[in-house]
Length: 194
Image (tube, rainbow, N blue to C red):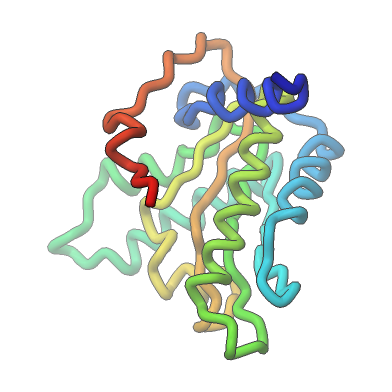
């Protein structure tokens, strides 16, 4: 088997979600985060629209973003849905993360390209970033909770209505051992050869 394929196979199979609370607070050099963003930039894209966008927060800015996210939840949840524990979780999600990135799809000006393709391209960019993080020994978490998908998040981030937040990425290091990977449905049940 090709050595490059084998290495890529190992990176893909070893990628794991590491919850931000399991990170240890050690800082990732900004240069490495830039390299990860460079990998994200090589995602496939229809019509060369390159719709992926990232807002990067590090250090105190990461804590400020998490606090603003929690405040946004408090403002928008309504008294019947508000949970103190959820607000607290959002406020402290980045406490041990090195960097927090908001990943979003910036809708291009080619209406012939379906929105779904722009979202898929952005998801591919995120996956490139996550795989690069794995290769560098960086822990990652792709979060979609809280207000990530709420229109108020777009407003808070000064995004347009047609832009779509795909998630909040937390990057850091962890001292914990990686868990074993698992798939719940056998590959044979997911593939049909015609």
